Image (cartoon, rainbow, N blue to C red; front, side):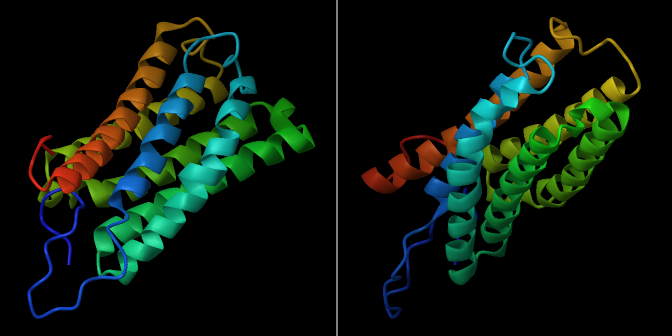
Length: 216
């Protein structure tokens, strides 16, 4: 069973056989955190992120590390009896695959030119994942301040993305390529990924040294 702090494993009881699998928390959180930070960079108001063209940077990472690796981590966590971590890793692994499939489809079919309908669709996509994230947010305090912070900032990120794409669909100029609003959205997403990276680093370091070196 998992411990109440973070997503690391509790020591097995003496009469139990050792687990064949180590905790997947580090690789799962790293996959989520690093991919999220790259996605945050594509939301910053730079020439490469104007419109949608900057999203190609995150595609490979979203498939390999954010997507497939998180799915594997989720399967291991579920097998080890951790519903919270397993469901989160499986869910967000599927998110990154769906995100990539959605944008690749848009690029290959040229339907970006459809304008508002596509932007409303992306806003709806972000809103649904905001709801998914809320379910984990209200359960995250049991797992330590680090995991709570990840889900809190992720929840805020999906709110900001929903507002961003709904505003773009409505013709608002708030999110022009050089607007400060894009710095806020991109920066908040990068911070979310950084918190996940920190939790993974803390779990890895504390496990490696057998004591709490980094708080989480």
